[in-house]
Length: 304
Image 1 (tube, rainbow, N blue to C red):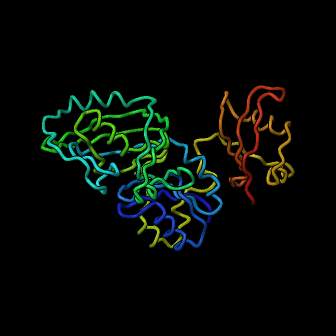
Image 2: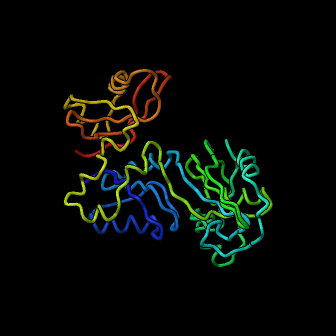
Image 3: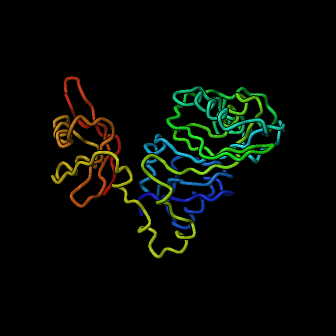
């Protein structure tokens, strides 16, 4: 039982809660590829068995979110669960002002990690330091926001905005709410969040935990090992001796060049190597230039 489950995480469960539940249900090693906060909902990629070794490639994928911002109310955590730090009338705020300020956050920006985050500072989680009242300056990181679009507006003393975002991995939606509220001078927090997409994987494909619990064969709900990274080029190896060498981590330069020749165009990045039955044998990286020219270099190999 090796593969990936696209899980619709419900609000109220942490990502770790979902992983722990799946471990008990499946009796297998399980890991997720990108945390969702407890109060958030949406797509959680859960790798099972040997597929946990592929999680690091999935974590790097862009994410898409649908978010609700509430203006005039700021909180310690940047979301609806935190203690309110600012509460003011923001009824004069207009959708046009919000759209204008959203422009400032598109592209590559520096973002300060929320104080209540799982990021480690000095070997300890930020949220633990914050709960103890320790004054630690959260780190900043460079993130890229590809799309930021205001979809709907609800006026009032504390107006709300429904916003779509596509961003790089590591972007905090509640940090965006905090920074947008500060830029507008009224404060804001993230009052609702659902992750709608991770890379090419959509929430529409997601499975409920109830479906996993009721399934006679959970494997039928899984993305097979060889298809977890389906967006990478695929190379099929039929030579038995080469398959044996690959599974032992041995890929001579000449064979690496031969595998690269099977990939059309000038593809760069990851490569999937499968056997004639469609089983994932290894993942590699396409390399260009140097004395060896265009070749595939192994990164991970998998037992048959």
